[in-house]
Length: 100
Image (cartoon, rainbow, N blue to C red):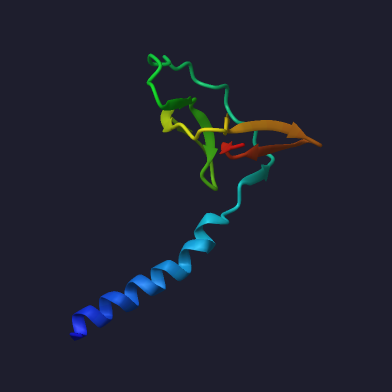
């Protein structure tokens, strides 16, 4: 085995060990700043095998940023739950979109 191959294998191993931490990222936010009103989007025609995820206001850590709607590849036996903001006890709670 060459040194390049050994280094490549080591890099792959490190990357694979970090993947579980990425997938368990926080899926909600609680802040004091209300999101702006949703933007009006033109929903494109249905695409077979895909579901439309509408646009939403994301929190960047300092301000709200609009994320455009987009298609997601359909997951049979699951349904898409849209990203959502709701007021709870005087704060704004955001839950990231996910498959159920």
